[in-house]
Image 1 (cartoon, one colour):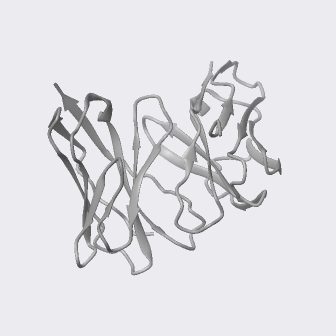
Image 2 (tube, each protein chain N blue to C red):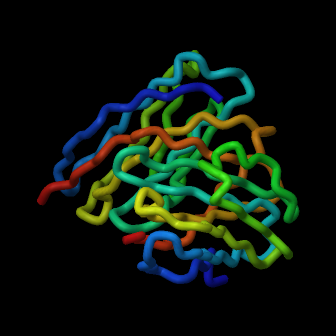
Length: 114
Length: 111
């Protein structure tokens, strides 16, 4: 398996533009997580899905952020409109549905909003 | 999930064992101790986890004290590629596997 695949790896956009980050989890994994990492705040959990259903989105910073998982093999994190303070590395992770199993992380998308 | 406390940083000589401590004094009976690491610019990587027995795999060993209030991750023969931030996380079985990362320990392995 190729692991968790995120795209794009790097994104530079202007303030006010819409940004969509994409994630393909490992096949067969039931849970998917979106994280954001900045120097100031470290790794923050934004939202997680189980069987394509959002379970907890309390970590989503504002209404400008939204996430979807239309099927078991694809998820998106959208920021509209983007702001400079959204600049960060965004990670997607997936794990099997069985208890006490580890999560696998993608390589991340480095977002820069100018 | 219980809060964990780790030293901010530590150095280790290449080829020597690296012992990374973690305090989790409020851990409950159904919380596992997980260790992940993050090498610069990469996504976090799972290392090992355990409940109360010591665990060993190809990457590391995990020693959990009998009262479960602390644990130590042991990298038996540190290499330069082990330079990373190491995170200790307490996680219950029924918490959907959602990892809450603290600041971790920055480990620098020197030649």
